[in-house]
Image (tube, rainbow over all chains, first blue to last red; front, side, top):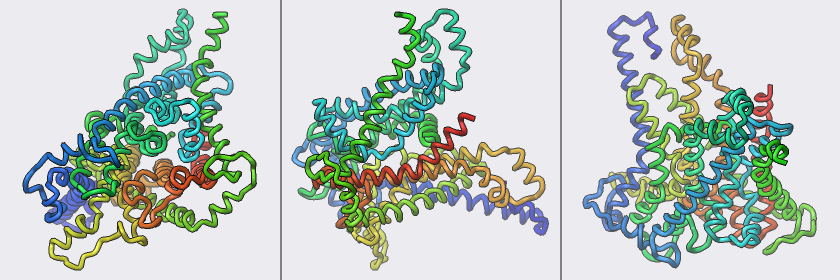
Length: 299
Length: 290
């Protein structure tokens, strides 16, 4: 793969030295970037295990002299988000209650929409698809104000169902895109044959398409889960004390101005807020990347 | 009746989602556009008054800073993330034994919330305790790294965190692109004795033009939407030195109670996004129809 091997001016052993040096340089560079990318995570974990005294006197990069889980306990159950001091636990639970239904509903609707747009095309269906796709790209600032009013009118302002509603609506474009692009690759003859056999619209979906859909369901679920779990803008705009998701609580803990700044608690809270999506990434990395690229290359 | 029902079932299944998008995307954009042309302050008004909100917006020094920041941050973010992503992808493309592990490390920041990223970097860049204090502790007493609290430099801390978070993703895109280049052509070039760097610059990279475009669109989109990261890292400060249009809009909407300004700034953001994305989507969808 390397270049200097082709240089005829050099004799054989020196060529190999050059190659070897290049190889070593290559690995050194890769290792440097590995360390650079890992550094923040390393700092977060080590800081969360240190005492405040050790943080003040010690070194950012140093390992904790004495490992303590106090910061984790505080972050989980007693850190203050503004006036309340219950840690991130209730907010973590809010995020779970919010993400699971929002992911499930938007994925199911996306699957049905994708199925129609790919297999039951009608006049104008491509146009509808294009209109739905554009919806993925709007900066959400442009819908914040009318959405706040609409949630108020619907009586779900500041509630978890309200946030689920918002996430389902603005997730639809992406999930539809995923399933549509997946179902397009399934030959239309399959649907036709099933129709001849007397199967209806839903029967074909449940018995033929859904069983084939596992890989794309995984992609859509991971994409939606990371989007919704990591969301901050909707969370901070449409929730109130008590219904906030974990990202909003984390920000409130970190940016609360009262009392002594507890960096170790901040870091522990940040790791807790990051754990679910990190876990998904580690367990299903392949699908994570697929979702990421599918969601961004085409939508 | 059942015949009619089964004939129209596909449209009926699609209808709720489509209506939802129509109302909550296009209808809401219309609402915001309308309000941006009124004198709305704390409450929306619906009497159209012309472009006064836009005049106020463009006369506001804070909006000026926000737009300047967006273009500075956006341009550097796109260029650096692309170069770094491409560089890392090329390095990883050299038959690296631990490729899977390294790729995982480069990409994990993308799984994190921007709020988490902002929190982590806020701590690392904290002048009193973070990198500055650490390097001083190593004996370089005069070392200064106070960008986070320096109004002229704070926007670059946002850049550092944003590049850290997104460059791995660009790397993944480019790596996939490198792998899809026809290996026959590459082998032929190597047989001809063309050096590797020439193979990259003359054959491989030019053939990845669509990936550059995709990466550009994604990064530009990310830059314009950057909101959480600024909130968590600098809170828009010091002063409003790191404000972006997204944080400006949020401040106007939810803490200043100036709905007219919020609406007009949101509309400008949307126009910037559309100027970038619409031509791209148009060409993508057209290409599919052919």
